[in-house]
Image (cartoon, rainbow, N blue to C red; front, side, top):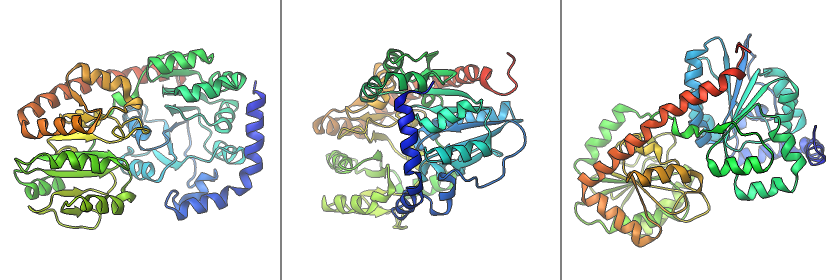
Length: 424
């Protein structure tokens, strides 16, 4: 039964829904929506629905979409009779999924969480089961999907302390939302405890990000860049956010011999202009990949302000500083992506999104934590001037990351009873 709070939410979103096309167009003008696919965000399908059973999987952004890919690939192999519909909510995640989905899987933008858009989306696709990742809890979509008979699963379920406080102010809404799921697997022990305190039935713990395959790369481009870099060791600043590029650059400048290359891959490539201005202001010679500027022996910083190439730059680096962790407020990014490729990881102190993952890596002596600039300088200097130490840390990280195959097996087993054709 829906709570008064959920009823009020549904009424409010219905009242605001006529404004959605205008708001989406404004977002598209700022590059935050695909202008050619706004109809999908309003629940209007782009393609016909294939015949047969359909399973819907949703990941909000790039991180969640990446975590779903191994599961999608496994389902495509093991249950080829199913149509797999994959939705996401950002332009970057759509571009990623467009390149990486297996043949036959369909990508659509997730509809906005308004009653009409949700109704149109679900009436067209008619999913037999829906799988959500982490913290995607949209009342109109979830309640209507449940009412339509879809089995619902929430994998790697995550709820922060702040979100849990909000749900505690509306306990009936929490019970109505979480009670609609047929399966909840929490990302970690802290989230499990918070969900259970809100009255949810949690069936176990599972973090899909532990199961991802190594990020791909263009092998020809890898060899070409290796030739340009030559014998210089490369330090990678991966998935950086504002304020972090200059901190990593300071640590890089402390390494004088051998003369390294700094590669910066921002989380959002649109920051390329700002990053270039900042790093050039630090006196660094910089080349931008997005502009086709050549990487030469004189280049100190290679700014890889492009999408979908992180796997390439992980393979070129001697050590990586993971962004989203240095300045606070982001919570870090997935350290298993470089670890799977044998790359030693340096992180700042803000790792709230991957607390248990980092705890495992640090316990295995497979990562270094740098809570301040002095520690960051020391960690970068250590790994860049002692390649044998970087290799050993990277190998320990790879061994730790390879345990993720068990996570995928567990996810498939937990989902099996909810999928079409399951034996009751």
